[in-house]
Image (cartoon, rainbow, N blue to C red):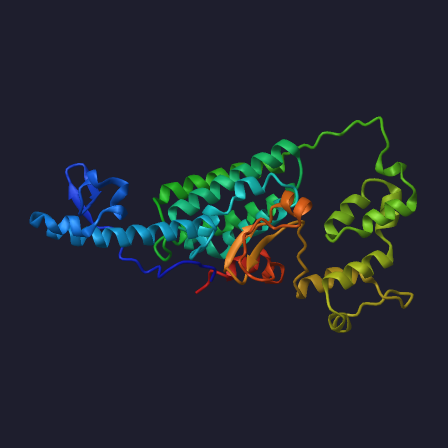
Amino acid sequence: MPFLGQDWRSPGWSWIKTEDGWKRFEYFNHKLGDNINELSLEELDNDKENVYVGDVCEVAAKKRKKDLFNNNTKSQHGYCTLGEAFNRLDFSSAIQDVRRFNYVVKLLQLIAKSQLTSLSGAAQKNYFNVLEKIVRKVLDDHQNPRLVKALLNDLSSTLCILIREVGKSVLIGNINIWVCRLETILNWQQQLNSLQIPKQVSNGMTLSDLPLHMQSNILYKFSDACDIINLGQATPTLHMLSEDRQLWKKLCKFHFAEKQFCRHLILSEKGHVDWKLMFFTLRKYYPQKEQYGDTLQFCKHCSILFWNDRHLALIFKDSGHPCTANDPDSCLTPVSPQHFIDLFKF
């Protein structure tokens, strides 16, 4: 569980009920201001009427120092709950980065499947705000609709179950809010299903104009089988290249282990291994390897999650995280979406 700071089991503030609602109760006068740490306890003790105040000021000074330390810690992204981490890691900006978009969508999908009810009210609100920005982005630029459709399908299924079994599960917020959220998701699904991607007219060089070996090299860079099949439907030449046995063999070896091939070996009529059919068969039994352009990083030395600063990394070979270890690079570990959720399971 990533967390950095002093004992988090703080008793918190004291509160009193007034006509205007609950207000925080302060033991010392507000005139003491921010200079409470600079007050001399001896000066307070000279005033017999302020003996009690002096004791309280000492406690307040210690508390201020502790709060200051905790605030500095939080500014370096130390978290203790999934909701807190989700709120403070800037996912709204991350979805604008093409390298991080798939990562954020996958993380939201995993949360939708199993962790939605564990989020606080503020975290849930932030979750749906980020989700709305993702949907708006796809509707505007027409990129990655398939990923977002899968996310919305899983989320709508989860919300249907939660709303139907509202008495058996704990939902933060009014049930009507969740009904409205479900209606919004269904509306987004309709918009994505009716999305028409306009045909781009280009007078310059296109993918079909490239030599065959270059088109083949592009297909070999893909790690998603659906992308290969979709691209193969563009032209007859790309369809021929997308059926290449060696291409699907490479894809199988990228996602699955050798011993898994032996358990599900599929031969064609000519006695050759049907690698394409093997891939889709293996996918039913084993998880595929996840690949992202950029991921969150976890510093094992500081127990901190953070996004890599790409600009610093390119210019100074610096991650942007001020680690105090002797060898900071050896302490950094990329965090997959599932690993991110597992960090907060306790």
